[in-house]
Image (cartoon, rainbow, N blue to C red; front, side):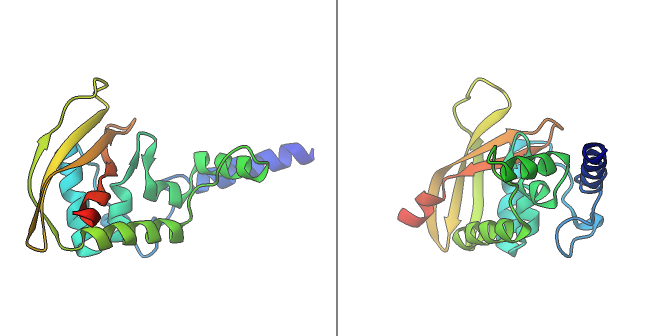
Length: 173
């Protein structure tokens, strides 16, 4: 009986935390959530624009893996509830907290703070079609940074997210 009650609480709790079911990122209304990105170039453009505005939650909605945006993981959801349970018994890592996501996006925004996108083009194909390598030409505070590698991935829902950006090049050049 206790096991059945626990399963019921977990299922109902997870359903209430599903992405899109809750209020979204702190202070965000559904109207403020970014619309799905339908192309890799658009994902990079919108991510850089959000970084320039210091809009860390918009950045978190445009950054992630094929499993989804980092901001969605911080919002919770059924998958996150299961990961959290697994982390309690040492079988995985918990989902990131909203504070962790904000800190991560703030660090990325600080590096990209004065970056302007000049041009973007496709890099060499990786063969999967689900991941695209782009080369972004940036102007960073008057300094040209050509061909900055950016990896963009398509989610299961068909949206595109920035997965990797070579920030080290901006710090070392």
